[in-house]
Image 1 (tube, helix red, strand yellow):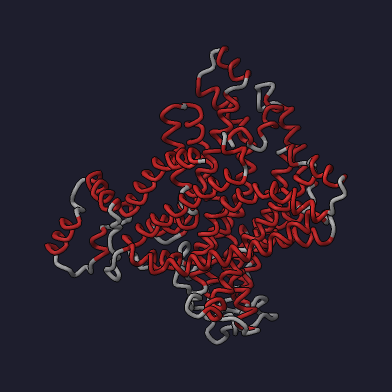
Image 2 (cartoon, rainbow over the protein chains, first blue to last red):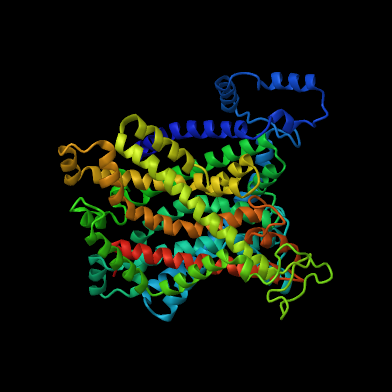
Length: 314
Length: 304
């Protein structure tokens, strides 16, 4: 198990290096001079020159990259142009709403997907199964900003049950906090639930065709008992894979969801930074998101080895 | 993954003759098309696709009004005989804007996927064919691109490339490139190990000739499948980006930007959001059916 983790970590290093190089180049690919972006046009040319020298923007690209990497390794991601605060502080302030949203959405998706997936597999080709398939198709094709607006229209505007924007921290005010996260989490959770339902159904069907299921039936076990103690664990592996593959979509979905519901999370920060042309902030946040994404993929891989012993030895 | 690419078995069957453009292959194409058409929901998907293409091509003829013409005396009008989908906050006809938006969406889907297919196939071909250092470099770069959540990468690239449709097309092209590069590389590795490639080499075929005449034609099926599945997602991605404010700029209409603009009027005029929303949803569902049908027709394993 330890070797699997080490090997995966080792393979991650060159990719991480390329990712940092890409993110570094991002700022240098921007049309126009970064100094002009940072300062008003009226600012004196010598002041601009001084800032350029101060920031090292007059040096060759590879030296700039080396200096940037040096600072990066010390945890210095630069400062936002807009509020002058370090990027790290900007991000860490926004981290909690995003993580809460992700956790809540994940919970909703599993709570929906498991019953629907299991029932669809057991009652295969019945009305229930078809309803489940329709739900999955709906969830996969529905852009989440549209789903968000549908939910706002239904629960916020028409029924007035739930708040449609803003954020209350559930750790401070549990009930209002959960209410403020409910619509965003449903938006994000349903799309994920659709994918998980589909995968779970087909992997359950595959597992149900195995010999050990026939043996269990011959022993006289009930269908539910067979699913619960024999089939589910074997059917879980593709689900974990799909959850891993969906991480990127989930993060992208979170960006849009946070934007629609005005949740002060990391995703909203990216969008705001892009439109404020706050390039150091864009650079920093995108890099942190990529690193987070790479690490979560690593965790999924390790989890995979933990569920399925056959993979560990490979 | 590389060994289990959908469609690779089929390529083997078609390629035994090592003369890809001959008539048996054309006959097989027809069989594939017929098979695709028999899939249950494919007719609906195909109808949606044809309708969308026609609407996009004939937008000036189909749209009842000028999509940019404001009518400040008739804002937020509800759907009725004059305006089938109502009007927006500055009195523009929502249906006409949806019609013109079809153009943007289809173009975004097709062009970005075409860019990705082209770039990805060339990179994958180079990686699989040259091997060694080039392979390592290309595939690590592709891994790096895949290390970003797609939407975040597209946002960042869109920001760098500047607002406008071109920026979004290139950004989405970059995002989808690794998928095709990996697919092509896997195909190339399996195909170059086949006997008929050895035979072609023994006959003195040059590297380029073998790549063009034997490898590419046999590797193309999974690429087609992936491309047809990707178009729907590219359309969704363009809508998401233009919803966030990148992509084609106002007053030009795109489904995503219309939906974003209508957000503030959800209570008084929900049709501003749900008109383009329905168009987007139906198009994506239709294209998904087409993509599934193409996959089922080309990949013998998914057939029941």
